[in-house]
Length: 466
Image (cartoon, rainbow, N blue to C red):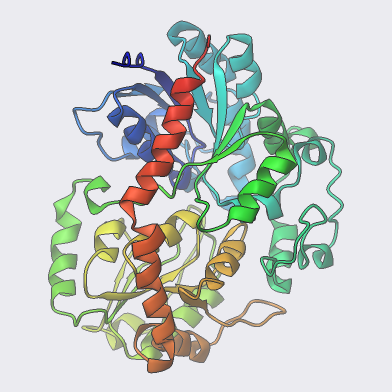
């Protein structure tokens, strides 16, 4: 009879954004369910935002307070939701101040593995010095991260040859096969304008951070699966010179959501009155900057489409959002707009929801498809357009058409895309494919658990000292 493997102690350390912390928490629970001990590292305020962990799992939250005194950073800011997009660089500067406290934790707790995020460039050398095994966990999909980042050596030494908008609307030179997963003109212009530079010197820009993080890792774990993008996963391993382990999609369950019945009860009551697969759920994320022109276009399109809708409209810190005058009165009874937190997973799992207007953050897209909901895609920036191209190739949804020059959107294009995906006969292919891919991939718990189990087995077999 085989001897049981000794318990692991795995420390996980996500970036200070909910879109990163939630999949790290999902992974933590999967590791803990195998009987291992997990230390989840973050700041006090971010830890307080996370859903509760089942009492039978050994997941310990390790609180590292951010250092005070960083210029331009609000006193209580600890996450990307607390600052405007233009101030995230200051949050990264404060985050770098955690290195000493992190080193003290690692030295005192001596975990077998540290699993860390893509911007944690100072974590690998600390872990290596202390003899802790190092795994970088990327919460993006493989195609997107390859298009955005090149090999580590290119990122570290600032040798990315792409200097113009035109360079971004074609595949980068390190992609050896044909692909339509590229930026459109207006998206490339936004990428060029996005604030990625550091605040204390050019050496701390995002490419430099990411390059060092790749370079210092022993293995790269990534939130995807071979059924979706096998050639991209293989290419990522080749480009970074590291083993890449897809850990599955970490598809959510309604029971994983915060146990707060208050907001859900009246939402469920309204959803229960709607016809099956008739409701359009709209959510563009909590950390996406959407212009007022885009909000107005979406609002007029929702009004024009004639379908019932539920819109979770949350603005990020420092942003102003204005709906068209009289909009809520005109759609009263048919449409609901909420500006506070809502239980998205529970909404998407409700039988009345027939379409999901999404910004195509990887986590949000996975969430919708895990319940077989076809996507109406409205990508805004960063990896989102690339996710939309990847998923568009599966015909599980459709992008809202936009002006190629400036990204503007009309109410007609919004309404037409929503109706096509949700109710019209010509859009049946999207509904059928979303349902099919739910069964095959996104909602296939057995398949996804196999990926997570393989990664955990790797951690067990490659623990420190072996």
